[in-house]
Amino acid sequence: MDIPSTQEHRESAQETARIICECVNNLLTDITAVQTQLKNDKSGNPQSQVVLQFLYHCLLAFPECYICKPITGLVDGQLNDEEIQKYNTSKDFTYWILSRLVRIISSPGCKVLHAKSTSVIVSILKLIEEKDTSFYRELILEFVGLYHDLLDLCEEYIENNEDDAMFDVHIFSARFQPTLNNVDTASLMPPKLLDIKGYENCQFVLCMLCEMFKANSTSIQQFVVTEKTKLWSMMVRTVHMSDLIILPRSFECLNQMVETFDDMHDYFMDQYTTVIAIVAEYITFNDESDDEDDMVLSTALQSSFNIFIQHVHVDFHKSFFNKIITFLYHLEDKASCEVMYLGYIDQLVSKTPEFLQKSSA
Image (cartoon, rainbow, N blue to C red; front, side, top):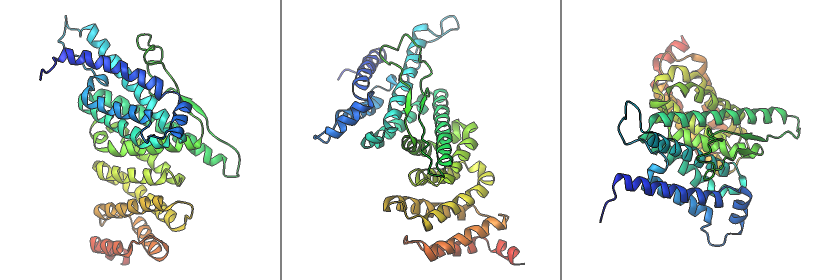
């Protein structure tokens, strides 16, 4: 079998990118049409699902669609203009695809596509991280910014609905569209703002972002160190909202951050203890979440206790240690899930005997 040259492959990638743009424009851009298509589909394999699978396939077969770094050398100390244009166009393409995927995830009527869309986003980021760490940082910063925007909206929604007020959120966001006026790509990749029409839309996008940050925590630790504290603070704020949809994902993300950002344990641990207490209390008293949410939260809570036990030390502040002990007894007494929380107390006692001697002195 003849193996195409690098130049031939890049030309094939350009044609593939054009086909992707046509498919996405026709089958993934009009969210109302996508919802209707999903509702009426009888085949079990709707066209929108096929397009998402095609996007994933092209990540493997034609990564140049998403990131086409210059391959020629310098000319008079400068990169070739054509190579620079190809590189910038591939970045525009990636931004454009990500914006379309986020729009799908923000739609409750497209829920059947959410998992696959999230998987494609995570895979795109993995590819970009391998090929261009500078662009990877750029994309992560955009995701962090989107999370911050939507978290602010959710907190405003919750604050304004405490007295059963009919407040909702609706914003248009220009995230992931840094080149809205790029005449070179606008015909194939027409700009379209993210349309966040309500609180439920925010929930779905925040859940996706939690999954994405969790999957990228190791890379963020290595390449986007400036955002670690901000990410942590936003996840803590999310847990404090106690939203039954977002809470399990944000708590899992926090657990992953504690394990991955090992240079920040002293900064994290007091807040982490408070977060564990919030989740433990939520599991104990909340009657609204379904069995699947309870299982996700219970599993995440067990992970958090294991992490806490691993990192607790004899100098840990007495009030936080006592808070953990109190909630372990509380959960053992009242929680419906089949977890023997008292076993964690035994582990804490065996891990920190010197601390207990200091506390009882």
